[in-house]
Length: 270
Image 1 (cartoon, rainbow, N blue to C red):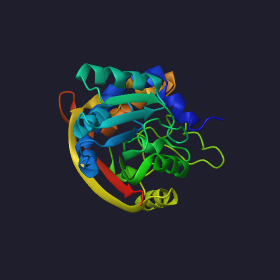
Image 2 (cartoon, rainbow, N blue to C red; image 1 turned 90 degrees about the horizontal axis):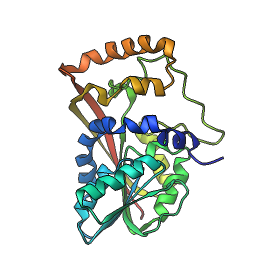
Image 3 (cartoon, helix red, strand yellow; image 1 turned 180 degrees about the vertical axis):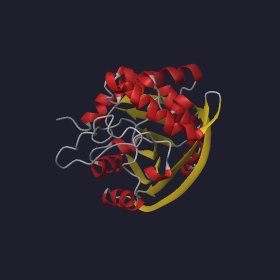
Image 4 (cartoon, rainbow, N blue to C red; image 1 turned 120 degrees about the vertical axis):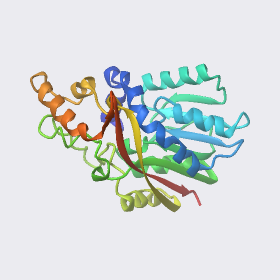
């Protein structure tokens, strides 16, 4: 069985990927916090783990300048294609993208000075093995920084609670594997333990909260409900439940103010 099998299917599903640029409008506001924690310097070599459509990767490439390089890695073929196109359109030539599973694959270009991730590391089904593999790609003074969500109760925009009973439960992880998903690293104590078990030291966490005014469909739309497994005969009920849940955040025609609670972890190799 392949590693991260469930996530490979999800992130290579054309219907899911087609709506991804809508979802990015929520996470784009967090990129400056991640880059601030990374404190990238000109000339550094950076690995972006789970780079998705590459927007944060490109921002990192601009931060390290023409003397630096950034490699974005992701299991998604269509998102990697999108990232390549975005870099070309922006005229950024010190960045490259590769379809890889960073939990196990070797990434050409090491040793890196920095590993980064914006909401990408929560999808590893063996996080200790994944972070240990990332660590082997870093130099002796390397560092890692990544953004992940705080707990569900601090992120009321999450629609999972509104859809209880309307979508099938997520599949149980395979024996010996960990649950994946947006809140897999919400517990800071567990996340620190994972990083330390993988060989990282000096783990630091900074918690952040902000309100992002973005289009309603940045969180959910009908296509996503279908992809999540809502059957056709329950789509109307699911849509109504989601609309009721999200009404509290609406701020104007087509817009909503969503409170986002996230955290940035930073650690070093030695």
